[in-house]
Amino acid sequence: MTGPASRPVARPGLVHGTLLAGSTLISVALVGFTAYRGPTAAATSPVFFIYFPFLFAIPAVGVAFVFRQLCAPQAPGTSLDQWWSRQGGKALACWGLLESTAIVGAMFHVLTGSLLPLVVTAAGLVLLALSGPDRLNQP
Image 1 (cartoon, rainbow, N blue to C red):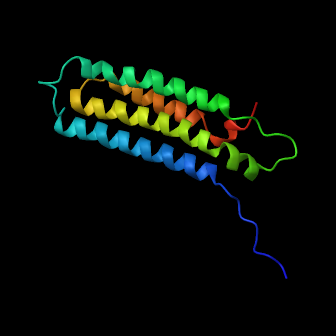
Image 2 (image 1 turned 45 degrees about the vertical axis):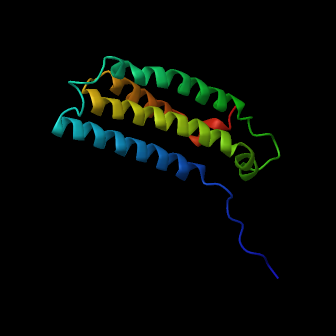
């Protein structure tokens, strides 16, 4: 009697791609909404709103970097599924922080109409793209 076919425990490429595509789609939609309708609270928004994404992004990217550093490299003799079952939570936390950084920047662009929060959006998307699953299990 043979058992069921072995399926991978984790599909990190699919998870990472979904997070990247989702945050990119949301960011583009928010920027497009702002271009079409104009900023929602530009006349009444304080200047603090323009700089808040940076105050959010700096610690979030720092913590994401810490989670990335906590991911131990794949030990010889262990399978990729074993590595992902042990390190997948840290990777997901890292990706979630970078995704939220991108969305926060786009959201504050909608509120203020300033292009400065889009720097945070672009940085979050680039860092999320660069922190793919193939880079996490390397020393």
